Figure 1 (cartoon, rainbow, N blue to C red):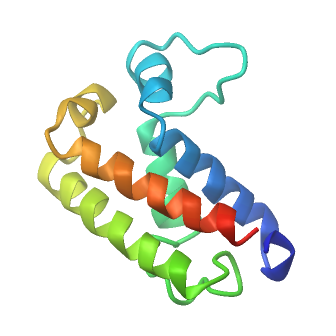
Figure 2: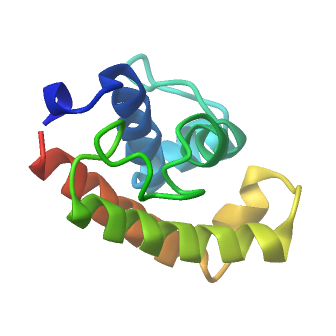
Length: 125
């Protein structure tokens, strides 16, 4: 469904951000250890958050992006779930290093929600 949205390039960026957020191995290598492999995208949690909340607004307010970036009600539900767990953790921890987020007891819930949203978006391609 990438072709079914108004802004497919933004959708591609959202998927890339979700891939990072859903991959704990990537997070350890790239975000914490700063030792990316040749095939790793180089990003960090701050960039991922900006893509998902600010640039695309898919986590800030998931419904308006339907038809623009998101393609289905399933994607909106998954975005709401991710926004809930990630937003709560951001409110709790604030502006600290990626390693603090990765060490949080709540981090696995963020990863799980990111995987769910990524799966929804891949299913709607």
